[in-house]
Amino acid sequence: MRPPKVLDNKKHRVVDEIKKELKKGSKLSIISAYFTIYAYAELKKELSKIDNMRFIFTEPTFVNKGKELIREYYIERNSEKKISGNEFEIKLRNEMKQAAIAKECAQWLESKAEFKSLKQANPAQPRLVYIENPEDNVSINGTVDFTSDGLGITPSNRLDSNMCLYGKDYTIGFLQSFNELWEDDTAVQDVKEKVLEQMRILYKENTPEFIYFVTLYNIFNNYLDELTEDNIVKSRTGFKETQIWNKLYKFQKDGVMGAIDKIEKYNGCIIADSVGLGKTFTALAVIKYYELRNDRVLVIVPKKLRENWTVYTMNDKRNIFSGDRFNYDVLNHTDLSRTSGFSGEINLATLNWSNYDLVVIDESHNFRNNPPVKGRVTRYERFMNDIIKAGVKTKVLMLSATPVNNKMNDIKNQIAFITEGKNDAFKSVGLDNIEIILRKAQTVFNRWSELPDPERTTDTFVNMMDIDYFKLLDTITIARSRKHIEKYYNIKVIGKFPTRLSPENRYPIIDAKGEFPPIEEIN
Image (cartoon, rainbow, N blue to C red; front, side, top):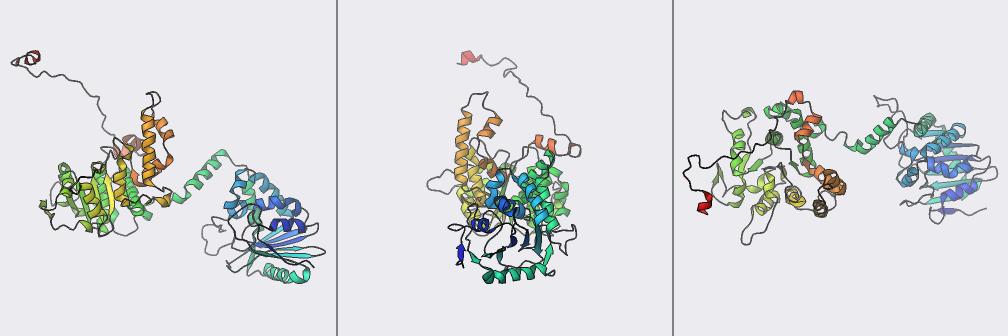
């Protein structure tokens, strides 16, 4: 009698044991979470000899669900991966042999295999590979899965531990348990046809159009529900019954939803739509949404634009949104340099700067620089320390048609308001270090700006720039141009944008009456 053996898929591999034990006339019984075509491909020579295989999925796979109303069968999102390969088999999938292997495997399954699946998940269900031979039986039980990594064919981070036992007398208990489960119709369900159906999908020749749409789905499936209005505006606040919401064009409503989505996910957003696309109205709708959630809102504006914002908080005939009763505070950029006096009706000496839930900054590019000044706190430092970092968690909405002006780095200090200066704030979306991303972008811009005129094109710039820079902008900014709106929205509903006239060069004389001496004499 052979002694038991531990198969850890490092020193001793499961696949080697199976290859050694499978013979003509063998019967194979398997309990596993997966059956992948790549495991079959490695063992196809040995599997062609056996009489039959019985396979039980340890988790409900291709199983009829009583609560499923739309489709007859419920197929988990990763069910396809249980056939076509898991994350440790990516290299094998990249070899593009999937269709050929699947076709060959399907033909073998038709004649020699039966598949059943547990109806209910059982976390305690052990894995098993049981080989019945005319002269001897072999049992491998433990962590084994019928995948290339579970059999030890491809490397993985699995910590496998399987006990291999030899002899019918020592292993018959495992076979009896398998047989009892196989015959229990209350516990398992036949899924062979569904497995074969999945195989046929893998080897079916699809049109280029179908492959294109499948590719798009797999790239974007995690984002399909991201911008649906019901997902973003979760609270029943009556937001969509407000005057400001119903005054907006479709592209402005999309901007509002995008801004709220980014503010909720990343704590802030920069609306960088072109001049004339209504950034103020878009921001007012965002403000109304947060006011309806009882958030306290502050709007910081250049002094010359103050009245553009205060009018919507006043009982004034010019306030076309008087029914919405906006209640935000308005301060000037210059008020950040003051510690006393009044700004409108706000007493700066007693104002609680740290108690705002949302701050809107109009013309936010005025904060692109943060040069230290000896002996006093700058406006930027005051805003960061007293509003953003102090007190309640503050969200930020910035408005600017030119958030990036002279340098790629111009946006750095504006982003810092959103991240509270943390360089790894967007690590969850794959942006590990904001400062390094912006530094690299500036280096690329410098190289691009030195190119000869014929080579210094937008396409060249895009090709040179690291994708992380565009990903960063996409994470926190909304930027549309008039061309974008004309291309993607119904201009008949919006109305045509005014035609920009070419500039006229005029040379008016400064001395219509001829009373001034000639400039040469003055010189």
